[in-house]
Image (tube, rainbow, N blue to C red; front, side):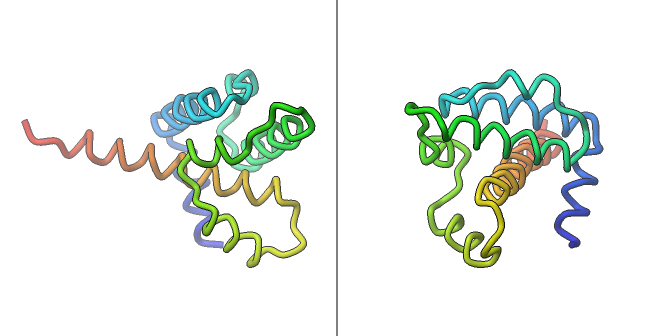
Length: 121
């Protein structure tokens, strides 16, 4: 619960949200996924989660789908994926993957922002 609240708070920051969208688009594009939906994302965790899960599911129905390539690009290991699947047994796996993607992309953005603001002249 605390984790979700923290995610929502971080996504409410305009600078972090804009950087999140840029990083998400970069990862999805390099993972051979469409990035059209990213332009219309709102600063709402639930909407972001829903749209990412939908895009993952939509792409999975196509023969050129390579979900592992996207997960590799985002930097989500198979061990992490398995851990979350086991913990959330019975939940739609696209929802689980969408949550992991949001967390990891936001983590990348926050780390970049932290080191950028703490650089020494």
